[in-house]
Length: 307
Image 1 (cartoon, one colour):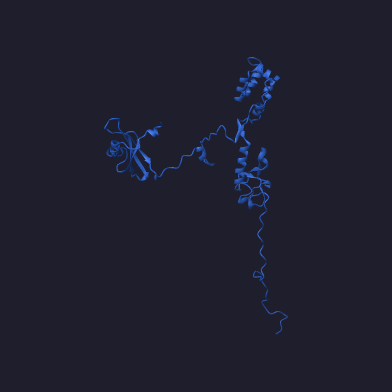
Image 2: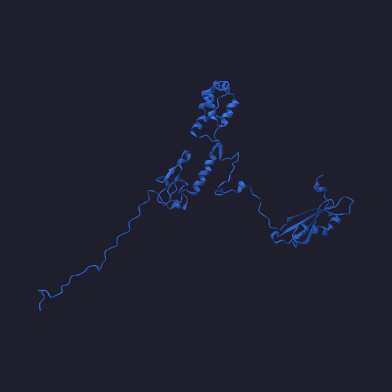
C-alpha cells in the first residue's frame, strides 16, 4: 500500500487546533507584521498538519507561510516540525528554469567566457578516425607489431606525439625501429600540414552555418535587393576555402555594412567595386539676359551725327 493511501484525510484534532503555536512559529521566522490571517489546515499524514497563513510582504504577493506541526502517538503535546514560505495558487513565480545551453544566443559570449561543446554535438564530426590503420592480417601490421606495440603506437598518435615517433625511428627504440609506414599515415601528414584537429565541421554543421549566413547577408535582404550588382563580381570579396567557396566569401570593404562578415555571393550593397561613377554636377545654362557684360557708349557727339 502506498504512502498516499495511508494518509488520513481528516486533520488530527489537536494538531489542527494548534493555530497559535503555528502562528508564533511563522512570526518568529518572518519579519514583523508580514504574517496574515489563517487560511487553512491541511493534513499531511497521521498526526501531521500544515497550517497556512497569508503573507503580507509586498514582494511575495500571493505566497503563504506554511507551518507544519505534529505530535507523537498517544501524546497530547503538539510540536513544531518546520516553517517555510510557499507559493499559493495566485502567487507571482519566476519562469521555469531553462538550461544555459538553451538560453545562450549569438553575441552573449564575452572576454574570458568558456563555451563547452557537447561530446555528441551534431555540428562536429571526428577529424581523425583511424580509418588509415592497416588490416589486422596485413604485412604492415606485422612490421608495426615488431617495432612498437599497437597500444603504444595508438597512445603516441592520440597524443599527437609525432616527434617522439620520429625520434624512436632514428634511434632504433628499445625493441627496434618504428616502420617508415607510420610516417605516411593520414594523422602524420595532417600533423605536418597543421590540419590535425580532434573534430571538424560535419555536413549538418556546414548547412546550418550556411543558412545562418545567408539569412543575415543573403540575396533576400533589403540591402541586396537595392544593390547595383551582387558580391560575386565585387573586387572587395575574399572567397572562402573548401566547399563553401562556391556560395560565400568575406567582405573587405570598410565602408560596407558587411565589412568583415561572411556574405553570400548573391548579396550586394552600394559599396560594390564596380558601381557607377558618381556623375559630375551639371553646368548651369547661360543667362538669357546678359547682366555681366558692358556696352560701350561715346562720350561726345560723333561725326555722323547731324545737327
